[in-house]
Amino acid sequence: MNIVSMAMKYLTPMLVDRIATSLGIQSPLVRSAIAAILPTILAGITGVASKPGGGRQLGEVLSKQNTDILGDLGSIFGGAQQTEIAKKGNDALGDLLGGGAFKGLTGAVGKFAGLGDGATQSLVGMMAPVVLGTLAKQQKDAGLDAAGLTSMLMGQRENIQAAMPAGLSDLLKGTGLLDGLSAPSPAAKVQEAARPAAKSNSLGMWPMVAAAVALAVLGYYYFGQQRQLATAIPAAPTITVGNQNIGAQLGSLAESLRGTVGGIRDQATAREAMPKLQAMADQLSGIQNTAAGLQPDARRTLASYAAQLLPLLRPVLEKALQSAGVGPVAKPILDQIIGRLETLAKS
Image (cartoon, rainbow, N blue to C red):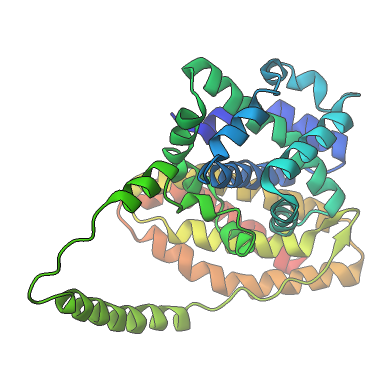
């Protein structure tokens, strides 16, 4: 079972296109935003459930969800009920996560996808009943009480973390939305509190302390060197078209691409990365289409930024392709992405 995939299955390509049309946003951008929204909402909800009494609080919210809505999204999104549903979704998330966390969610997703506040809040509000409805259906089908609901979410933390697009976690730092992905469950906290203190042996903790210090020194040297070798993606220019900042979209895409490709180590990880890479290629195509209608000065600014990104991304892609079995799987889509970036850089 993967709770992220269970929620995502309701969002068919046709439905995403319908949402995009209703909001006046290109479909690739909506797909990118949804890929960020679903795991972030689930991470925040997991954080709520990990606190004492959180499972009961979540259960009360889910008891009010109409799971029938999951089968009727095609008529709701893009229809007369969309605005009302989105408002109710935002209200439910705000009450459940807290106002500060909700603001952090919309702010991070907006920056990640390069969307304005209004479009981001609409999308978050529309995704709320999808996530909450999926959880409510799972709770009902499995007959879960508050403790069972909490246990189920604790068991889904790896899936939620894996679904986070590269670069999104950095934008969510300080919001508290990711705390639940590393927090111990309430049951684990009780067990830890009840565990008696272990008696120290004659050597005490010194061997472990010495080993930790040695590892810290090695880690500092190795990862410090790696950070020096990794050049930061330059700040994106502000190029606004309607409610979309395509400069920010391109910068976010570059961060995500570098993170996703950097995680490719073999054929298996290449296959796992393909849906994200395809979404990035689609998003880049949307940016290209928008760029074609820019004024000359704005087009030159975007082209200059794309030209800065190319030398930062090529080495990462080339390194991934050197791994055994990766080329046949990932090379076509990576060539497509680089080709589109090169076209942008020349526009």
